[in-house]
Length: 433
Ligand code: C2O
Ligand code: CU
Image 1 (spheres, helix red, strand yellow):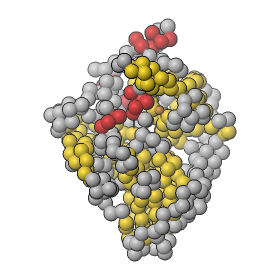
Image 2 (tube, helix red, strand yellow; image 1 turned 60 degrees about the horizontal axis):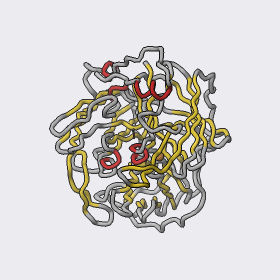
Image 3 (tube, rainbow, N blue to C red; image 1 turned 90 degrees about the vertical axis):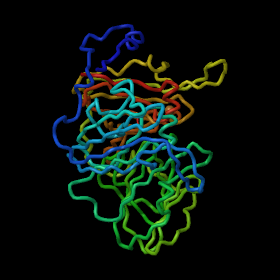
Image 4 (cartoon, rainbow, N blue to C red; image 1 turned 180 degrees about the horizontal axis):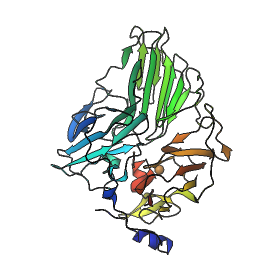
């Protein structure tokens, strides 16, 4: 049994919360006795991966590959994943990024479970309630072990699957200088897709920095952001840049034209689609950049009233560590985890959070267990389709206003998805019963 440790909070805030602080995470599980609809075993092990450059590097794999196997389920199905650790010495877990699972299935070592050590296993059971593009990754030593390959896609489909050509594309920065991969080296970088066919590209950024990709050769739409459908998405010009937050996803759709279409990322990484399998010219860099704040249109759900409001200030600083100056701290309201006070809410609260960055670098802020709606950026209100996200890139000097509903009790981790920043302190909890 894991219980919420309120000591750091009390030390940080100087007061004890009067409500129930004993939260037994292992009561917040997925369905225990039903027969699963989708059953998957993920075996984490050391392995080798061949990069686009042709170089083969040491990696960590799920079922011998990275990205790991794509898990597919339909909305409402019970998913059961058995995670087995063959020989990853730091231990592993599986976190279902963007899926609002019951808390005990969240895969955070030290919070919702112990890390799965070599020779051990752990079973996750949950029912995804929203369709879309999600991903899973280890949450143990994420800074190295996600980079080295312990991640994969989790696709939640409608009862009738998508008709057309569909492909999941990860932008992943391997821990090798300049090694940015679009997808896997053993999948073709050129694919034949018949003209007139519907195409859905599920873009996932599994690296720790924002990644800009460009789609050339066709106009296209952003159909979903972080697994949330965009209302009334309008066509974007060919060559429009998409900047994926670290951990973020965009679903891109278009109708295959007669000529080639190219998806290009940094460091010459590219994928080409064309009726005859030929490569297309890369788009020239520059051009417009997609902005979810104003994209699409649709009735926004009413905001507020808010039972709680919070102000978070993200900052960085230089410190002193192991006798060396230069260690960078990444703080929330001037404090480093675990001394950052938790967001204290009650179940059912509507919560408004202002996140302001005084930092010089990007902080992809990720909330576990809850999707959030962006209300405003730098004082400008969101005017497009309601922008729901689970990983918001807060750039240098930016200020975001977001809201969420506290509808999934447990002890949740909210943190910067740049794992180095997280290990430097930019982590906090959201906890309620
Ligand atoms: Cu994608 Cu706390 O994680
Ligand atoms: Cu950060």
